[in-house]
Image (cartoon, rainbow, N blue to C red; front, side, top):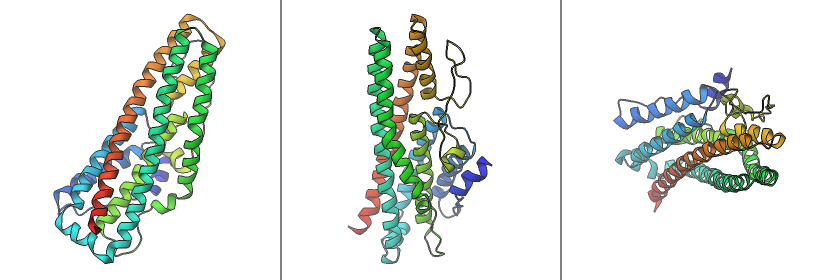
Length: 283
């Protein structure tokens, strides 16, 4: 079921592989991204890999835009509305990426603050401040997700028969990029990152702590969820052993946040580069 629901949002676009070597490379990246989304569970590792694939995909598409035949086609007034449609989508991608980068930056600050508090022995103060900060971080992300859900249908591939292949390719890239950005939001918010929850809205992971020492009980428990569980355990047991467990979890989460931040910054630069390439067609 999850695969069917994911595929309904990511339409398969078969590029004419014989026309140019770039087509085969682009289709390979699409295939990897589709397979990851359809697989269901998305770990931090797979999210980072998806971000890397999107970066490579956009680099290839930017090369495709600069092919003489595509420059001629896209600069034609007949296709101007289609190009403007793609430009609108690229602006949306940059806005969403900005939300994600802001959230990750705030997460890094929150992690540094709680680590400092725990090392000083101010467990209750540190935990409370971290939880308050998390709520502030999640609020704009939740609002952004709601807005994205309302406009999901606008990201669908164009229906007109005369839509150019490159425009349809760019729009599919936009759609699959938004799905990956949603998974980043889901990760930061401590939600399940599955293709099913991405296509029908995510539900919060509400795990009960079953032991004093928190371990990852399920593959669906992300580093953020593990921290939430670890902090719940620490609230009930202020032992030095529990504090060490939480500090180790925070170190892991901090590294993960840095990886996601690096991935988001990379694809944001690619979005800008592609947008500039399209804008230059009419300058």
